[in-house]
Length: 181
Image (cartoon, rainbow, N blue to C red; front, side, top):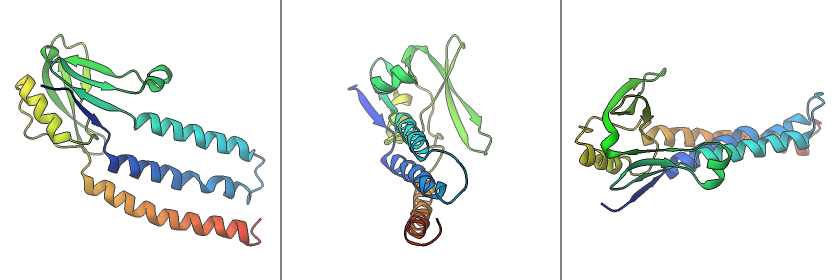
């Protein structure tokens, strides 16, 4: 089997980045309308650092090959924050299902020595193909495994983020061109 690389789904990346910026871009403008003595440059810096953190999280990718499965990040993310993990096919004992606090289902790879569990990446492009590769390599039945969030959920969130952007534009316009300040 040739190595397969699965990045985070573009729909998820675009939606989450849009939501982050729609929530944060108006803040420096809104700060001007308050009596709070907080430097705009510091708020802008913090928003920028938050954007870097979001980019880091969304840079995750899954690599599936003859040796095993790995979750990796670019070098700058490994150095700064997340290391990722690798699990060889012969180390995998089973996939265990767990319920999330919101009622969704997530799955963990359980190693044969049962010392660790590794979260099955679920927000990647090509999820069904990756799960099929896992089944082929481990003989674990994966027919009932579905992504945690369906694409329609992110489309729904993206749609409402668009309306949030409209409110942001109106708010920024009002602050810049009216007597609110």
